[in-house]
Length: 407
Image (cartoon, rainbow, N blue to C red; front, side, top):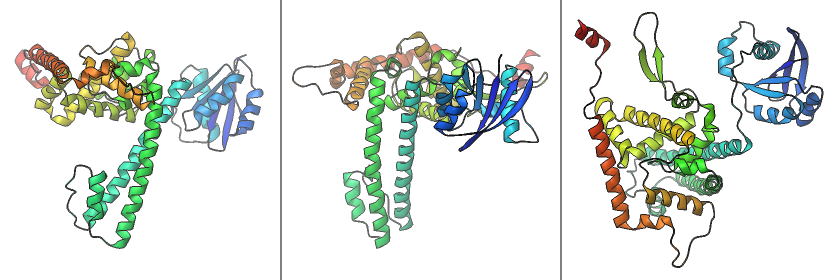
């Protein structure tokens, strides 16, 4: 007999409601500890299904209860809230709603990553936290200098060797100097942590063919490629590139009612914000390198401005990632020497030994100026070919202009 168990989980406990024979039955609370969840799992049957919402400790609940039941399902909390809005809200009601929606096969599920993807997601998230912390500390140092009317550092990097020498020569109160010294020590510690995380990500990427494939795209580095692979997971769960675009929140909002025309607005910004930010970062890098992506950026920038052009390139990169991963193909306009240099840099970051003597790998071609210039020239030809291809395209007019033309 099929039973559905809804669990409204919190930090220390979970409210449990059983759905059985079309009726809901409250079953009290379960302690959110290993022993509590294991004991609760032993009381369930192999045919039972457990439903929880996506929270910070949801994956731990999945791992603890999966051996005891047929399936543990993680629901999308935003969609559940939109479907089952109630004026009276309690833990029992929330757990009952989860069980009822699953029993009716109307539950919006969340895809559960495999252990390797979950580990890569944690590494990417921790690296992002370290980078944000380091940026915040740098901003605090700049704020101290600004507060004392000190002009910007004449060197490129304030926190490099020359920048720190210049910083030590500035006249400021003792407490401010002490604060800057503390910030610099914290930056050094964070840089060490960042190096460790980069090594772990490089080790994972070296064994992942999807990461290597995304590295063939112009503007995509190791961190962006690993972050996208971690966010995408199994690309087969996206039946079309538009699904992946929506997943990272780069799809435009659309409003349409009745006989009126559809109104397209700004991007939705729903889904994985970190993956969206990495795609935009890669878009800016691709816009600076010769190739079709740069030509596309320049074409959009001429009409809509550089910010919208960067977002448009980010969306095109998401579509490109879907095609490369689903078809197991490399980027058509990849620069072989540059790709080999990226792969070799990833291997060195992962801790592989450096080659010595006369042994030369494929990345050596990137150090030969003539070969590097030849690849850049081919990329320029591809950029010009794209410009010629779209040169005859005509921009669509507004709806009012099209209606007037029809009359």
